[in-house]
Length: 348
Image (cartoon, rainbow, N blue to C red):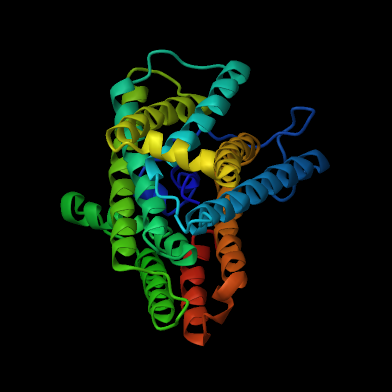
């Protein structure tokens, strides 16, 4: 899922060398009696917490992906498709602002955070999400978009090589190559079939989304350094609230400028079913993020990475197994396997 993407990717060990996604400080998990759990096992209480967090992440983000795909495949009785992407981003961000605000009220907040950097981070993230949603609206298939978006380390690696002189291991390079190569194979396989929905514009938009991810990584790294210099401890729901607040603000301005507010609301009034899907999308995205924070607060980031990474693969497989995507062909499934191996390499 794309919402997920910035906060989820912060937990990945490989990407932590390339970009800094904000996470709460990690500590060894403790059981209900305050004792630190052994590194070789979990207490029964922790197993229950892990199950709850993983189940929430799987359920809400798999539903998010299915809803997102369904929204852009929806056709009204007159044959009209939903195209108000900024309107969708606004609803999505507002749902996260609501949950983030509740989280700050329950778990506390920090005042005086660098609002300028938070604004830039939110702007970059909403642009990334817009580009991904617009790629689906342009006809790019959900599996290709999801697999391609998983290659978000590629623009960061290129930027680091060009401007920072940073070197990368053979594993990092092979992992990125597998994701990009596998996605390309799936795209070619879809393009050669009658059911193919990929488009040049859609792929270009995904590339733009990846570029935005690279910029966001640099901004959030500066944000982390700034907070450390000012001795401010950012809390997890602070990041969720403020980032999505600025995402909502940017989405509102863009929707207003492109007349998508009126267009989107009119489309929803005429098609109540799509309004329900949009509201469910926002709710699932926000609750999914809350489950990520719940998991990270009880376990380390590696555990959360394993959950979110396998969730992406499950989302792709579910999408491929539904509808006419079952005729992807042997070449397409080979591409899925190669890309999946690259993604799974993040947690192996």
